[in-house]
Length: 396
Ligand code: ADP
Image (cartoon, rainbow, N blue to C red):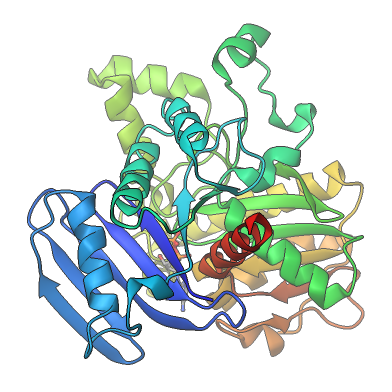
């Protein structure tokens, strides 16, 4: 079986052609500068092809992807009939979607209804879906939502302590994101433990970061909120912040709320605190060269992640397994070590040698650690491909 995975942004579109059974990626690539001019970067194994192709809309981008996938030299399949299904990453499923689903008119309408909650991403995701429907009308399409895994949270975790009318009338609540990654790690951890019955805290630490508390395979809390701005500080996002900061800055600097939020989303986090970079490699280099702002930004990050782990251990009345994933979680030994040092009070001990691992699955806790600590590389695309394949097979 071949699943085409599509992640459509407003001016870009990432794709992968994947076998959901083996996880083998046959080809992958990126369309950029949609609406502007259009460029396709296509990769098959070690080979890379870059082409300028006009892409006035997402439809031309999808056509370019399908053309190159069937190209006799650059492609990997003979005909688009070999694509059995398309899996679309969709940012916000609001309260309407607690799982992935096959796309029909009702689903499209529901994704449209969620636009106020995901104003930047949902319209772009819809453009990707509509373009595929137009060009491949007989191929089943599946929507996989970034929020769906978190829909098992209880009200005490997802409600904000603001008047109920905003929840009832406007669906304002915590949703959480990176759900596809958290779901993949929860499943992988369950496979490693040989059971689902354990308490897991997953730390997805990348450019965007979020943590999830997972009990018996179900999410019970997560750090991002109505939007991905909440939770721990990130590459460029501030994480949790007192709402009065927005009022203060807007009043003092004559900024609009939108401008202030752009600053909190794009210029804050470890980039804002260090004034150097959002990339942890640069921050560590800065810290090692004596830059106090880089050291401060890293300290703040370690501290806030550790605080969330402590909070989730309290929320679940214990924790059995802590997992690290995504760019920082998979590769950054110094960050994992610093976070785990805070958790020594609950018996977390890591093996410094094992902690040197980068980008590979490995248990990094010692045998006498009271909590198992693992590095597990995430694979959101595989999760999307597997959900898509499962739904399409079940519908046949
Ligand atoms: P995104 O949220 O964009 O998916 P990723 O999960 O790919 O981000 O994480 C990207 C981040 O991972 C980079 O900004 C960088 O800070 C971090 N990173 C990647 N490799 C390393 C490494 N070897 N050491 C430290 N940090 C790393």
